[in-house]
Image 1 (cartoon, rainbow, N blue to C red):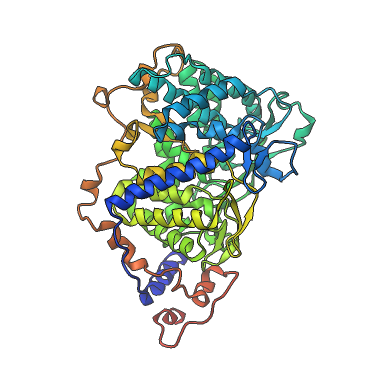
Image 2 (image 1 turned 135 degrees about the horizontal axis):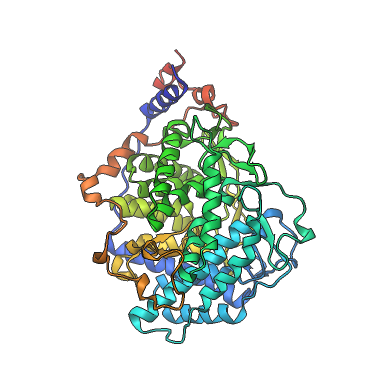
Length: 565
């Protein structure tokens, strides 16, 4: 029997001995209460940052002070997101606008314009600076222009945030000066590649190189300077050329100078996740069929080799029928949300259900967990990916089950992560100990997606169907596809970005009422997965996954044990 089919049989066998009660629907009143609770949680964290940390990059919630680059103990690669440029405020501006807090949004824009500078002798991650800072500045600019055009607010605003995004973009551009066009992973904000602090670096991750096109294309189309989109597209083109030609899978780490793969693990989690995301979203945002064709090839390969029942397990890109590890990392939780955008809802529901059960077992989704759902890495930095997928599945299905899943996240955050000065990352989900860390994405993504999950369309100041969320949950308008890449005048009226949908073809997903005529569709997909995590049989699973922890043998007469025959 082929390995893939055997694993499918394994999952089917596991599912034969499971029972679970159906969750009651969240009422309208409860949904409103949850929306207001999430808003209170956001302001608890936001005010803690503004009052105790700003203009630092991040809040240290246990110390209740700001984290500046170079003043605290070095934490390694994680600190490369910091540039002493008020990261959390820049990353959070658009959340304020979505919450309807126009006064605080305007104040935040003024503070960023007044206080943020990029002329620092600091080495930063090109990837993080792009998705958090360039993306945050662009989204802030777009929303400030929207308020000015549609509501007559912020009449003083003259494109300042866009100019700042362009300045930062030019400071990142030298990273692309490689023989392959694949960017260096880090750059010095002041000295470019000439800084001795950079050392000798020859490799980068696939996601690091392939998560530039949305922000850089938007930057080109809003400034009229094509170099940004050209560089990002060249990197995407080169990555596509380096795929494994027979499997269509990508590796995780490659040499930036010769393109050789250094790590050939292929999955949808850490190191590769947002490359796949940006293949699809580049098509949605820019309307270029080439990106969709590439995504579809990758997607077919992932679903053929990496997808194993509801699980997504890394394989070797050159030997795709062989697993390369026996655990999954938390970053892959974004995948069901991407499947919703693709329109492949059934596997999205299945994988999300598996993740939800793991989350319930441990209060949070561990940073990594084994294929028999035990903790592999216990940290949980309050990541947004599971909430993001929950939001998109609720949008697609309308199933209140996903509101209940969101409520469980809210309860876990309130009970296990809330501290007097914000929200603290969980150092180990098994002990519940805290870490003195509140990443900018807690405000920019986690609490944003939670709010959007419980908010109704009339609660929001704009129609989100006219925007694409970047990987950092920043908003870029679909109308960017209409803007000529090389001849757009950045000082032109922002009205061009906010056209009425009837003016031309709208890049939108199919109506879910036609896709799913049955109101209980999502429930019918989840039903066979009841108690998947609690009912897992690690002894059988070890035949295929070699899990690091075993719970015990199958019970006598357990139908799962028939798989041994």
